[in-house]
Length: 390
Image 1 (spheres, helix red, strand yellow):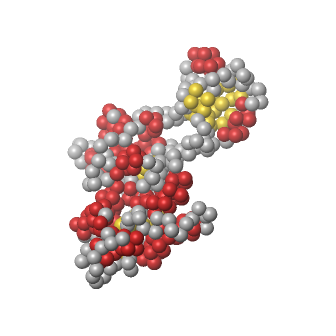
Image 2 (cartoon, one colour):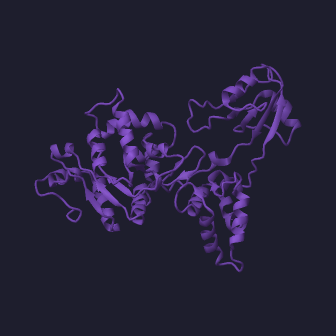
Image 3 (spheres, helix red, strand yellow):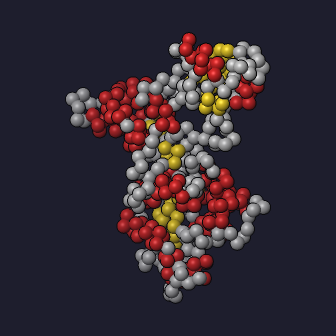
């Protein structure tokens, strides 16, 4: 099984793509059936095809947490031959031995696990006295402290270090996730806190989640009935997702990224309150929606550019539309009163034109909300639109 993956080691930037090739449903894990199907397909060229027993053995070798699925961390560790064995360092903390000690600030980096200390600078005593004499238990930058004297949790561990008594640090070496680059030519996936890549077709929200988000924000003092979607993003989306690497949809569904079957086409100029109300009126209870403003990580220009990728075909919207087609879903077009009243219409926005064009080419059904006059769509008078006339 190892020989099938040796090419991955030639470039860390291929790891994400290889993982996603196995993770067909995009849920962030590789199931035994997903692993088996791809290995069987690859092994058809060899004289000794993979069997179910071979797959079970490989899963057992990679699946270190025993949940019978392969997490991204486990995949990376196996491919790169990284052993996550624990090791211990024992010393007595003091001003002298702790000189130079620094670690990542969990308050400033939301991606850090809340129960570990990740080292950014090794204490001078450890570097000069301990490390040279303990080749199998050396502390290095980015290593992680799991517990101190059996005590877990960042605050509790720091208290142990303040007691000036012998401390035993239980540690693991850093995982290589931060060193895994993503191919710059491809659209960047969003990642969970442990580095797991999640494709765009898993950046969805349920009807209930959208209603809950709307109600929660509407009850906030910052809410203004006149705000647009663009205003909503600045007030309620960016503060929550800042620094996480995730859009609101994935941030809310980290434990269970939602598979999209409804593509929502809309413009950011629209009134935020009416947009949420229209979604509630026209979404089905079982649907999972991709809403650009909530799906993309709205961090800044460079981050959004990376998520969109260099081409429309390789970007998230194409991926989502292909998933919607596979799930036998639909596109819901949400025109708005703002572009209606200023005489421009929704399809003055070329992005919306491309979305409906792409949906029609894929054979994805296109439906409209009740704001469906030709004036709403094109800025010209006429009868209500249908999916066919669009």
